[in-house]
Amino acid sequence: MLLNPHRFGVAAPPVGFRFWRLYVTEAESGQYVGLSELDFNIGGVRQLGGTASNSSAYSGTSAANAFDGSTATDWANNGGLPGTPAWLRYDFGSGNEKEIDEVKIRARSYTTQGPK
Image 1: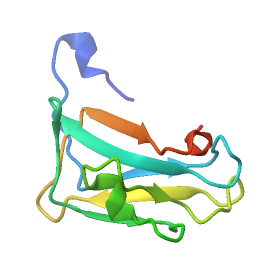
Image 2: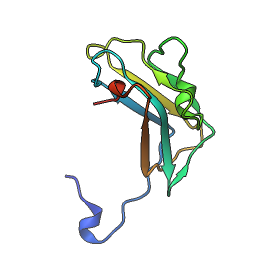
Image 3: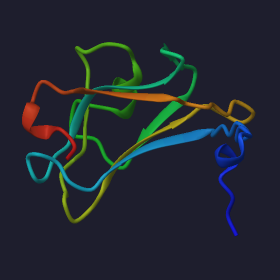
Image 4: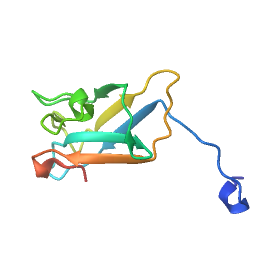
């Protein structure tokens, strides 16, 4: 049996996670998905200090570009959608679990490459 603690006026205990991932199964363009920036925020403050990784990266892009704070750089997968999902992962490191309360996705300049 699952209980909803909010139903009884009790706040749920905070839960933080070390790993955060954006998992994309479809994109506007079909094969490619791209992002300028992916922000994980707590109280409106961007959380940094982790390591980025990805399922694949198109030539000239990298996972780190999606977390570098610059809209002049970006990440795009190396094709394969919709059959092969694309993902970006951010690892805050051991002992650095984060209770993210907001995720911001900033589109790449190629607007047809946004996640669906």
